[in-house]
Image (tube, rainbow, N blue to C red; front, side, top):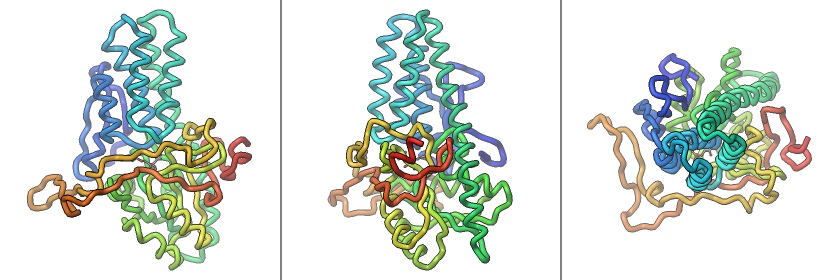
Length: 362
Ligand code: MRU
């Protein structure tokens, strides 16, 4: 999607030096668009755990490039052993998004089947590139399948824009391009539909306020940032026509792990008879798990709750400030579980389905 009018992706091989991988350091957005280079497995693991890159599909794509960098720096010695170590390290960086383990498993399988040590590096790079290329296609198709839902709801509206509420950032910054929840939104906007997006700020890291608002703005999509607690009131006032979120892991029965606060939006949508859709690539489905309660929930540092980061206008710099009493403890679960019964449907690259075991199998 566009950054300052230029089509941009979230991750790419440095065209001047194929031993480096370029990413957007998302910690500085929306104030600073900073591209950094990953040079090693350690750089990659840190980029994922420090959330320089984040969002389930992008974490998977980044990990795939991390495996390539690990093999590249190790040369041809001991490649399979290093491969296993790299996979183990990367899988531990963030526990909830299942795309991470999916991507590392895919790389591991592809690389292990190649015997020639030099060719293993080539296979690692090719697999990382394939994962990125496929992710773009998958997200585009999520958009194609989601668009008719938006069009149908819009035709039922007597006047005004179609108001879509989204939580966290399931936009192109969370994928390689297009996004999941945002793919139907971008395609509707490109078709000239009258749409408006309510953007949940998404405390504590504010992915909505910092990332979703920024990327929608870059594409010219009308939007308004709201506090996380406002969605319920807007729904009661009839100002939300549908909710679309992403997911980090969805069980085989349709329970959805997504950014903390998603469950409360689903409850409010259910109470107000508002469609609540989850947009996901099928790589976010964990076919091994049935119950949402079995999904590992990431617990992050209390510092993320106690401090808030933003642009200091007088100093012209990004600053962090304490917003709690210094000694108050804080708790920071990153994700919650929305039970399948609260989800109207899944928008996937293969089509739209019911949020149930049967729906997903079909
Ligand atoms: O902690 P984050 O920013 O990685 O969380 C991201 C989300 O919860 C997204 O909604 C999810 O990964 C789906 S992204 C296409």
